[in-house]
Length: 449
Image (tube, rainbow, N blue to C red; front, side, top):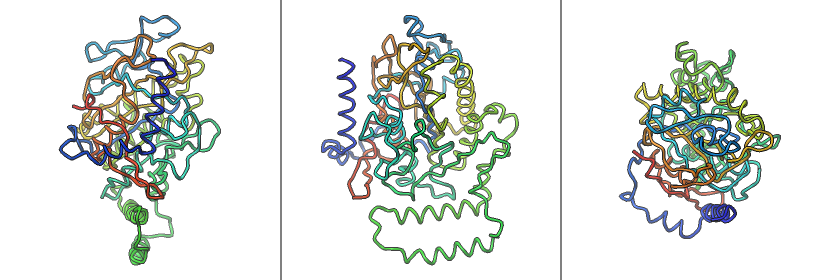
């Protein structure tokens, strides 16, 4: 198959799925509970680590040491604690954690642009305008956290979804699509913590009561809102009014619960553990993510950075940037997070997905960098019903195309929802009442224990 036809087929398939083709709708309505693959609902929480810019497969999990120099690059593979599995030499901590994770080496789609590809990575749906940097719109498909908040909200006084890290932008453009509740509405927006948890002044100001509001006034305001609530319109087809009600209940519960607020307090962790995660932004953000998992927040997204520029989008100076800036904190923070979850007996019920919007080109460019490449790339998953210590799928000899078992972003999203106990074929409705399948993909059973 040619490169052009390969990409065209992927885009066509994705577009048909997004716009709710009849075959998809029929398939979605015909799935019975007894037909579900194994491990449905194994995960209580999911943490999505989004590596904005696109992490190179050849320089992390899928090195090609026998390829020509202009393809294999400067990094060498090292052995891991799983016999036969090698990863990059600059991931020494993760090399000792491979028995707890699965590497997917055959992720594939066809969108070369950061904005629309990130939308796909964070919603599980192809953007209706592939190859663009269209800003966020009200008609967008909801991000994972919003979908979970809508379909499986927590009954605890904590948010149903949280985002740790800044709002993401492609260059100087407006915020990217795929980060918000889209057509579900503001009631289902994830709770965002944009501050750096490694900063000395780190605090989540939204969780503090104003000085003029004491406990008595706080209770009075809550009771007043409760009296007004029955006067809301009775017609709420899309559930947005009920969503706002649930959001209010959780917000008051969060403000009124010292235990819930403590979930955001890293000072309660030992210095030794904080050092293990790394005294840098990513490490402390992952430690905060673990605390939010303990607080039973169902979906936590960790955003690596505000912009793709000078981060994983390594069009130039790929090797010094990866070696000195990107890989060390990523290696330390992610491995500490996975090991910490496992040591606490939480990994089997906590799904971890570390991914970018695409990979990098097989051939190194004239600026000693790698460019955008969605045709094949690697993703790391762990916990929550995923297999341990295996590699799923393979790329060809140059890490250019899938050699076996291609997995699309929508397949990964279907698997994620399945493990969270949400049927991927569930319909969600936009503002006009049109139904869309939660995920147009397939549950990838090769990934499941």
